Image (cartoon, helix red, strand yellow):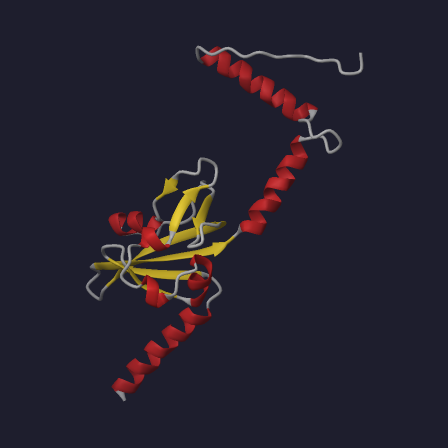
Length: 183
């Protein structure tokens, strides 16, 4: 009975990970991949068989969308600090196996054995490309004139104020060109 109960519990956990809507990747303590669920396989474009044993950074390469600089996965931080690490303010993108990228939100947590010793980590992420693009379009619409594509008055004033503050607080200079296009 105990064997059947353990098997049933393990099978329930496997089925749950297979059917969850977010990508799930587990690693060992050295950040080498142990498991990818089907969503993680689809998003990273790596199969579990290909990814198992590889460094997380190879299979799940992350970049900051604004700077295009490599960003370490939160698994390293979760392992080091032995705590859950959730979304940060950075806009992170996953670089997929084919070189394309997609906007993601991710979190990570340490995996512990029964004695509380950290034995690995888990990373959970989801594709938020459409949501992020919509937010960018809304932001652009709120700061630009739809006919000309130029910044609107409110955004212009905000940028001038920012330039004035920058000039006051640092040793920088700014130039403003005013053009009257209709004579």
